[in-house]
Length: 284
Ligand SMILES: [Zn+2]
Image (cartoon, rainbow, N blue to C red; front, side, top):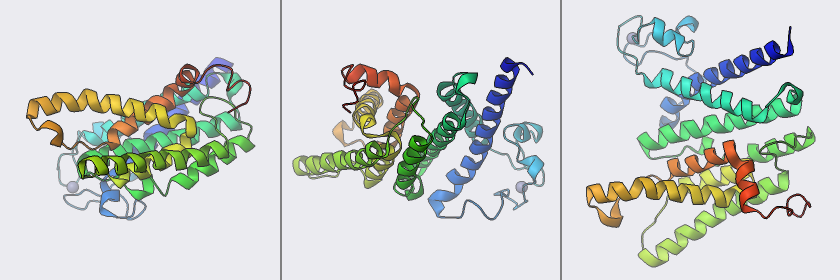
């Protein structure tokens, strides 16, 4: 087998794994807001209770072959399901190309980094869909996930990973504390001035997880990008609806957008906002 073919097969494998993660995300998005188990019972048709068999549960393909209908009762299956699977497949593949750029980087350290940050991206896809629909960010995908961010930093350091998104456990812990601390301060300041709570504590827990997985240097860029995206989306909506400053937008999806920019372009952003040499000299 030629090295090029092997690397191509590896990317196909990464895409397939990401599609499967997307399939599991559909279960999380449907069940987590209702506090139901994401493991059992198996998937079933919400209309007739038909148990979905393994060959009816193949990402994207089954939806196409079933012509978007339940095989038992014929109820339409939303295009959102294959949509989430395809979105996750593409995001996972793009991340693979970013974190494992060539055949020389195929080792335990780089593949582990891909696995960890693909799970992180998947959590943010679930957060976005759940926050849009239910206006909540589940604890499982925020505060309970934060310790795993510290463990991930420890594991990647142990494996000697030094590529894109590499952080040590100190940066992870300080990032979690700084991320949640900054948001708590903002909420406090906003409350003192306007006597209303500007953001939810779900956002604080979300930034706790961001700091743990992405480290201290990601917090400021994520907050800045989230604010810019929030303004770009919020101001036209306020003008259109004429609600002045009273319009309430969930801030979670904007924070998620910031974290996604960091996951895919963080190294470039870091070079841009920290004076060159401070990182190279090991001062940070
Ligand atoms: Zn059915």
